[in-house]
Length: 235
Image (cartoon, rainbow, N blue to C red; front, side, top):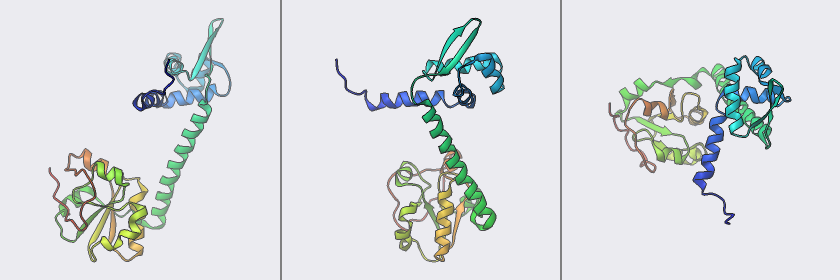
């Protein structure tokens, strides 16, 4: 019998299924309480602020994924953590969430100290100005995200390339930087770096996902030519 690992898509399908199981806040909360020790469904429901029926439904999802095990003790069904590194997974999720909250807090604190940091260009304003000859759109997301889709005519200068790409920016032009959305710090950092070098830069107060969701024109492919004039968006 072959012992070869399953194809990559199948391995990622398993990960996706696990992620779907863990994607509900109530299930994470139940796991947190079960991690304290084996408990009956009635007590878990009470601790999580759920009805017994609702708690049971979430516990069955966790059980099917092997994240919890159950046993009957008289009239009660007791739940405990399953085998495997589930506590490590929960800790990794917690640390990732704390990291993201920290990034958002840093952005908001910076905005409080420097209100101009969040002095963003609205999507409506950008649409009115797309054919201005003195406007440069700057996509500061990683190159692979840019290639998958970007605003028409935008240049791509990720943070690690920004310093070396400054000579590509036309003197006197207004630079509007955008990234992944309103809470993405990449555009704020780029604007700060550009302003520190005396360039006229502002950030788009939304990002590529909001542009795409509005049904506006999207370009796909490698980096645009330096200095390419932005195209007017469809719609």
